[in-house]
Image (cartoon, rainbow, N blue to C red):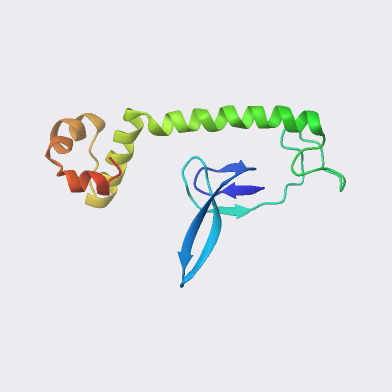
Length: 130
């Protein structure tokens, strides 16, 4: 099991991507939502019902029923987070936040969309994730 520090979610089956680091190819686990780096995590309690895990427990769940229900629950949650991330309003808000941080301003959403967004050059939009 892995933990994403960017999304604050736990991931059982992460995406594996190949990276070339110092001349060697490595496969690393990345988050399926934000594609950030994942760190390994060993759970103490069942992810679905919250019971303390025994040594005979498989993975992060106490039994097969909890595993099935837990996977169903987390699949729905990841789908929900992806929809939020891909929403056009969320994209503009991320763009606004990064623009305000970089230029040390405090523009509102309306001022940003009306005055700044149309003037941004295409290459600058990519830099802000738009």
